[in-house]
Image 1: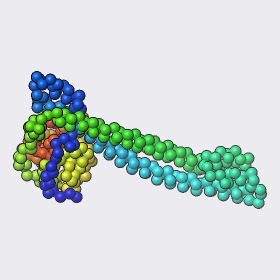
Image 2 (image 1 turned 60 degrees about the vertical axis):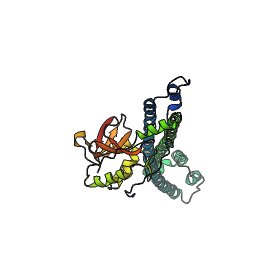
Image 3 (image 1 turned 60 degrees about the horizontal axis):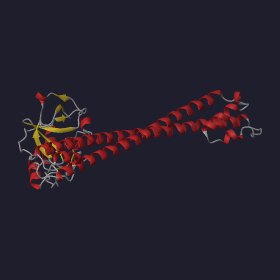
Image 4 (image 1 turned 135 degrees about the vertical axis):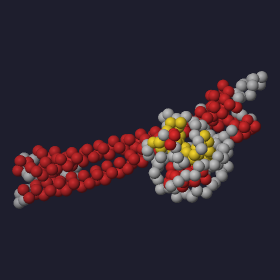
Length: 332
């Protein structure tokens, strides 16, 4: 478990930046010296849009990782079930073979030799059903074998289907990662068009207000203390500490300090506890933004939240309504 000590980490501006921006730069940065410098508010709006698009992709990436974990767990269970069924089928097959040998004991086994030595389950069943002495075999054994073979086929099909879903989810992960990288690269390119003085002005607007939080109680106190100790750390898409975070990674690890397990996904965290009205917010509550949900922070009181905001701002304290507010959840 991580402790709550504060770590301030230098964040090269744009090191984690991405986005839709080269095309936007053409419309923002004039090609003629006679035209005005790019408006810093326009640039900030564009970069914020890119950050949000990258964060949406990042949260979809987190969701896909959770889905892949579940699929792999299911596939492991299916394979184990298939192995057990294979063993049951083998046991019944041995019983049928023993029955045939006993029936033909003392006689030439050439007529049934292929059945007795057959390793392929379906071939075994086909040969068994065409034997001239089939009617004399124990009917229940034949029925048992046929039933177990069908059950094994069902399990094999389920395993193959789950394996295909795993492959598709891996592809989804790769696509979302590519989207994140593209958005960050565009935002970095856009910011690179600004003069150093303008970039400094842009980053200074993201400075975190140091409003003392309201005292939290119970499990929430440990979560709030941990989250506040990370103020100043870097924002990195998909990160969950110890020195860099994305939005759901920070809230997940903060509540882990209180012994509460949360998924690494803002949309999944929105369904992880009882919802609370804005008028009833308490320090430690998780607050969610955008539709569909793609950002989460932690309420600290006085109308303020602590959150891993974006690559420019990092982990900071900001207003509850600095982003489009959707709702809140109380973990624990």
